[in-house]
Length: 606
Image (cartoon, rainbow, N blue to C red; front, side):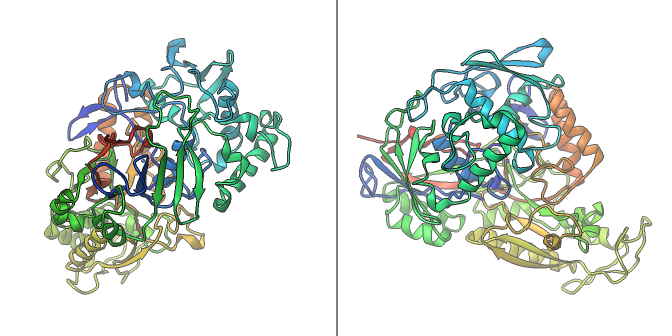
């Protein structure tokens, strides 16, 4: 969820005991990309001074409305390069609601009606075909997501657009949202309005390639037809560079070349109407099969912007001697091991808090962060991330590494612990000293972890965790696959797809938050990216409270409860990557903690 799931799940700024909460007071997750650099000398890229070559996981979604299974971060970066969001954000606390005034397509909202109405005025912007961006384009987006909520990955029942009582268009540049309740404005601006993307209604409002553009979207039935047409086009990557739909956009870049699972080329738009004009003429996105392949190309100097795998950090001085700048990319993120509560066999086990506690105590986060991640990761203690760049220890975590306590917990709940063997349930039942509801006598503690391929540090990390778990008879099987998110979906117990036990997709952070680090999309019951189907009534109540209160205490209460309840197992949170870029390339730092990449800021030093 590079998120690995979704980059647009982040935004904020404010301190809370034990963590830095970006997202309260004045201002309040995606798959994963990579960033390499290396070229012919410190003052130019491998393909010329107006071009930059970037290591990047292949994007496979172009429609700027997220769809389940396509929310990886590389898709968000790829999409934002071509289609601007209504608002962009920054986490430095320098602006109201953390809105990035330069990059945003609208002025900050004016709040009235006791906090219910937000009036928004668009700036002067144009589409790549010269047509103006108007409120009709915002209405088009709104109509599509409202009529197709079941197909929108960002939708959660009760959230946007369910929480909109009225959407009023005043004129071609001004519109307003009136909410059903008085929300914490910082939350609403950071975690709801972050989804709005004006779409080219004058090009897309049809239901077939040969259809005539009309106002189909103004009825639910018509909006469904339009959306199905756009979805089908976005699921056909081989046509991305040739389909007329994608030739009209609002972003700083246009798509010149797209090879499925291969190279992608973006070129600067000469008539881009934003103030952050591109300084380069071309960006080449190059895919790699894994860390080793990418690092070999980086060492050879054949890429301008890449990354240094944690296992290769000892070669930082070498890279610097070859003209690279090495820079950690810190994220507003958390990392965790997802548990499948709906698995018919392992779900009853995961529902036992004592078992989750024992397993958490067998994960040596500080040592793994220091040794395996070479100091580029820090422990995750709960759902609210540390301030980007903070070096954390497990001192503030609810559970520290404690194998002896883990063994004691298991034995006190009816398990026969067999070190380096198979621990089994000896006392079935629901009593305090028994294994728990749904756990049969003789049931083993044996689980399969579905993890990501291509990350050497991740492989080593799970070898260490497997070893520690084995010491108390918990048997882990590690199965690496290319996309662990895709093969471990949220599921019902009756579905064949619900056979997975544990899932890891956090080699570059599991979830990158929007400005406000609340959990309505992640840990609330039936949340859109609650893959493990965790459900806790108290957690739901605390998550809801963060949406209505601007008091820091609400987010702290939510964090503290879930830190202890363990909806997932907290894991070392690595930096998104250790970026390495040619020293002549300017504008890369500071790298966005919300996992965005704005190539228009980059330029070569003259």
